[in-house]
Length: 291
Image 1 (tube, rainbow, N blue to C red):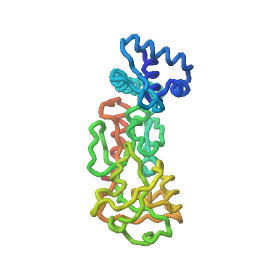
Image 2 (tube, rainbow, N blue to C red):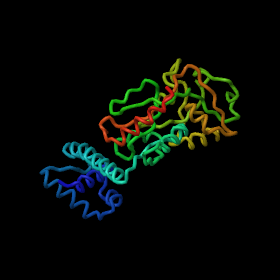
Image 3 (cartoon, rainbow, N blue to C red):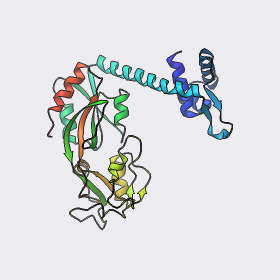
Image 4 (cartoon, one colour):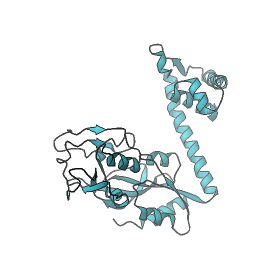
């Protein structure tokens, strides 16, 4: 069994089509089909079957294919992580992930740390965990609710900020000194997305009187998208005081929300990553904490 075959398996499973997967993988469809056929022959089992009940839905993994797919993803992620880390180590580089909402003072301090070649990598909304596990970054500034537990990480809490409601400047609540969740009960709120984003936290859950609000899409993927949608009157949002500090503009209003726990930004690294340069930089940055 070869890594190339595992990549082909994952590609076909994700696309549910040999034709689509071949385009994505940059190989011919016959070559891809032959690669999967050789893998099935080697394992003496089928990996894919046609969806007879719904042909338009594409290929289905067999039980054997499902098992191999899960293991293949783990193997390929590990290989990609090892390659990324080795390349950076060869160049004495440490990749640091940050997002649009990361306090800029933290990013500046990290990039300027003495004795380390830091490469800042801006991450998409909710992409923090995947970037760490894949090896795309060695360290990351992560935003989370206070008290969150991350078994896979070593975490150094850095700074905290209150949660605020983001309104268009002409909104009826925009001039309030503060608002409560009751004030927001009828307000349409932007969809914070799924996946690795702590969805309930950014929706202000649990609400005191249940869920009476309406979530409006499309899901926002960046702070800039959130600000643009709110300014256009598409809905309001709950965000952090860090965003309020960095994205103030005339068509937006940030109003503190009473009764919500603050958000924390921490520096994280993988618990099993004991490389000396990474640990040294992590420890140095952790000393910057104001908590």
